[in-house]
Length: 380
Image 1 (tube, rainbow, N blue to C red):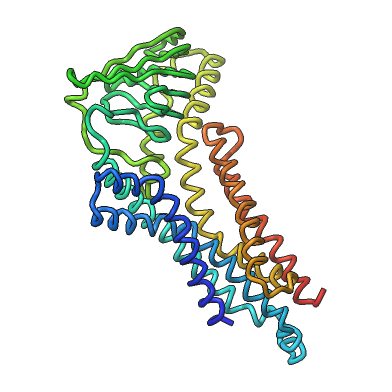
Image 2 (image 1 turned 180 degrees about the vertical axis):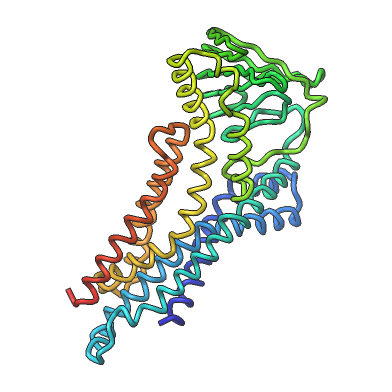
C-alpha cells in the first residue's frame, strides 16, 4: 500500500508542480525571454526558485489525489473485501498511510515556514532586478513599508500608482506622539530627475496624539519623500516572509504601537475610550501578519486532513477511472482553499478573527474524515 501511494504521490506532485509552474512561467518569465530581457540561464534559475514555492501547494494536492486513486482502485478490485475476510481491519491497513501523511505534514511545515518564502523572495528579487529601474519606483501593495524613517505605510492595492486603502503612521521622534492617516484612495507621483516621490491622500481622515491632546482632521494630505537617502534594499511582502520573520514583524509592530504613556493623564472615561481605540488600531495593523503566521502553520496540516477524507471517499467512490479521482480531488481542494481566500479577504478586519478562519478547513476535513473512516471500518 505504501509503495502504491508513494508511486502515485510522485506522479501527481510532478503533474501539479508542472501545471502551477506553467502559470507563473507564462505570466512573468516567458515575456522576459521573448523580449530578450533574460537569458536561458536566468530563466532556469527563476524556474528553480519557483519549484519550492509551488511545492507548498502541490504536495497536499498530490497526496489527496494519490489517496483517492489508490483506494478507489483498491475498492473496485475487491481487495478491501479480501482484507476484511482475512480478519484485518481497515484502520490497521491504513495506519502506515496515516503515518506517511503526518511525515508529509512535517515536510510541508519546513517548506511553508522557511524554504518557500525565501525562494519566493529570491525569485521576486531576480525578476525585479531585470525589470525595475529607478523611474518605476512604486509603493508595493500588501506589505508594511518602513523604508522611510518615522513612517509606516500600508497600501491595500496599487494600480499603476493609483492607490487604494492606504494607512500611514507617522511617529514623532522618540516621543509617544503619533499621527494616523487613513484614506480610501491616493496617488503616487514619481519625480525621477529630482529623486523624489509625492504621495497624495484623498478623502483622508487623520488622528493626532500628542501629549494630553488628541486632534482630528480630514481632507487632502500630501507627503513628500527624498529617495536619495532612502534604503535601496527590498522588504518582502507579508506573504513572502518566513515564520521567524513574521514573528519578529508582529512583535516589532506591537512594540511600536504600545499605548502612549501620555494618555495616563486623561480622565477615566477618556482613558478607557482612547485605550480601546488604540487597541482596535493595533489589531487592525497587526491582523495581516497574524493571519499569515496562522496560515503557514495551518496549511502545513493539509496533508493529514486530505488523507483522512481521501481514504473513505476513495473506497466509497469504488471506481478505477483516474479522471473521476482527479475531479473529486480538485473539488475538495477548491473547498479547502475557499476558507483560506475568505481569511485573506478579511485580513484587515480583526473583529472577524481571520487568523482563526484559516484553521476551519483542517478541523472540518479531519472531523469529516474521522467519521467517514469510522463508518468505512464498520462496513457501512
